[in-house]
Amino acid sequence: MALDVSKQVANHIATARTVVSSVEHHGSIVIGPLEQELKKYVPVTTNFSELFQGLSTYLKEVTQNMQNADIALAQERADDPQYRETRDKAIQDLTRLISRSKSVIPDSLMVQYGVYGTTPYNPDELINYSLKILGLLKENPDSVNTTEDGFSVHIDVDSMIKVLTDSVNTLSNSLVNIKREEREAQASLENRNKKIAEWKNAYVGVASILSGFYQLAARVDLADKIRPTIRKTAGVVQETISEAENKETQTSEISN
Image (cartoon, rainbow, N blue to C red; front, side, top):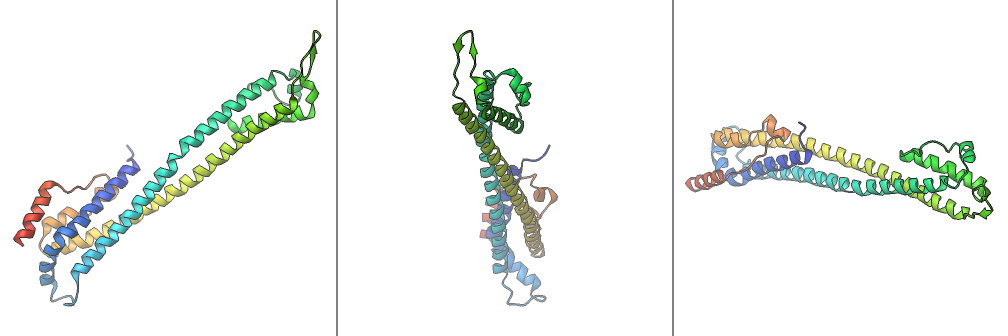
């Protein structure tokens, strides 16, 4: 089953939060042993505290960019139902007007203009069908005013043309809006996916570096908690900091 993308992003955010929290709670514990282990191999001026904070800040910013892109996509998609509802109502209104128009136009004339058969539901076909009726009405305005059995029936053809034209324009505009929304949603989707890819790259890099430093400082237990895995990187698991771990952190800080 495909993973819901927003859930995936939420898992990524939680995973990044675990790494950032580890730097905040464990960084000071790790740095002393790390400097002692590497003092013969790195310059004494190396500031591991700033390095840890810099990596943490970098991961936080990349994570925030990903979250912002995911929110933007959700907001973009939220508009879609409104535009679809407008389109569907426009289809219904135009279909109703076409039915009324066909009821007063002679069958022979409709056949002549290619207006026959069941009124189409496809919006583009419906617009084309309506334009044929409009052409018929404009070229033969007197054809809808007939006299039967001595009774004269007068229909305001100009009003028919105006109402039908307005309805066609409403449907056409709704289709334009939907196409625009689809393009914008696609752009938002591509941007969100790009930010997810950037996050994965940053997370693997930062978590790998920090877990490596933890390991060198002989804190394999802490390294294992932030070490990147395929499942974490894919977003199929959510990283959380348990109460037990918080207590362990506090105890470790006091003892150190």
